[in-house]
Length: 256
Length: 254
Image 1: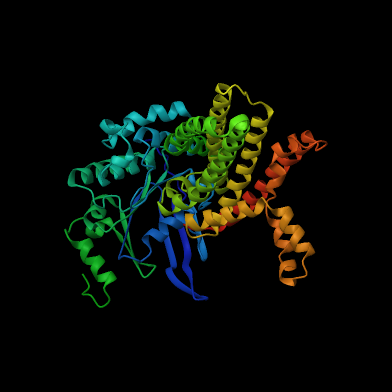
Image 2: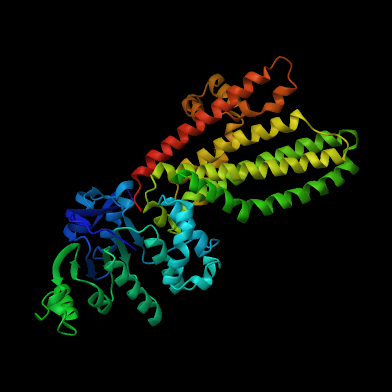
């Protein structure tokens, strides 16, 4: 896919606080989703984010994409503020449940998203067949997305995330709900992307996938980065990352 | 192609494919039936009735369809999360709104033109070809649609559901046809409560300015001038609504 590796961090979060606000009977209720998050994803690495539900993984990703704004602190992508068009051009995003217009086929959907990413029509048309082949959707290229299974939608989601050859790909639960073959294919694709120099930030509940793919893993607890684990800490000991995770998220757990 | 244009073309194509095409076909069928029915009931004024009823339906359907498309466009994208894959690309938020708006207006203009062609065809078959009346009614309907869509887009961002946004747009659309009357009543009534409403009346779109066919048959009404003024008014009113919508949408989080 040909991504260039940069010395500038792919993603940088500095002292990020994010509060969600909602009004109820005239009272504003605040919920803190991120509480001083400091996180850096180096250019060219695969970084995993682990954490229990509601501990801020998706919020961190949405902040990197400009879908949310930090209450305080700063988020940058390759040195540019998150959410501005120039930083978004460098990012690909696979949401946990990728939603597509049901009336579009994968080919039409990729043409649409490619055009929105600023690619020329000829370039898009040249990229689509190999990409569909790579995600295993060639045979369904002209079927409507409304007829797709969850696994097929996830494959299409991955295709749209990398179509414009971003330098950073954000993956929110990329293998959730997929069958074993699809999980294998996704893993192979992500590894190939990283070998081409793409940085990946992967939020997942699947510790085994994080273990296989990531160079470093951050564990989020209550909106804070409680611990960053390097691959060498778990590489030689099966089950080690899981033990570290459980110890980190469960107060008073036995130290692994 | 820039992002707004990509979104406009996508919206135009999908609306025509999924919503407007069946509506136009249904309209054509109903109109042919109406033509046969009026042939038996309306006697000498049949062409006139056919034109009035046909173009009134074109106007109501154009504005209704645009109110729905504009109100549901953004809200459904948010609800169904299809918005995520658009706003996480280098697409400025104003371009997203403008693209969706322009696509909806273009699709409904295409459908309105097709429905007007149905009316013209039925009139031609009846031996009473329509000319300026038909074109003026179409132009007025399109300008009203432009304003209605802008109002619906704005109201969708301050509403929680498509139904409430459409209801509010419907209220504005109805009141917008009686602005002069409401203003007159508010100015001449003794009631302070009614007078307090006067500033709010100025915020309503004045759709009577776009009833061009009324002016066609009114001596000394200055049709050319009112065509230009009406178009300018519709464009400016829509631009202000879209400007406010953009300001709200920029602040929104997803």
